[in-house]
Length: 153
Image (cartoon, helix red, strand yellow):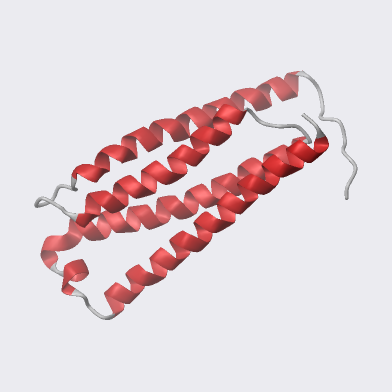
């Protein structure tokens, strides 16, 4: 992969990471606002599942923003691309996990989340795939020797 193409991939994952962090930090601020105004839809005793699901959506969305940044930083440190399948799986996980938790909290059934929660395990599998794929690629990089130094710009 050419240096400009690698830089483009690094920038794309950095952008995804920072956008995700921005979106989910705003979501966290909104959740804090719901708590501050004591909104019954969010705070009443019967809505613990909603609170949990939306908190998990916020936390996982922020986490996946950080993981995109780590993915980009790893490629930049190696001076080489990581498997594209891992990047796509990371992107999929970063959407499905938080979305599954959020949708699962929209309509709850007693103590159970709504149907949207089915997206969360699919996202978790994508995250596991991405992590294993990157770990295997790094193991291969270790066996091939140190990465070639790349000029700083």
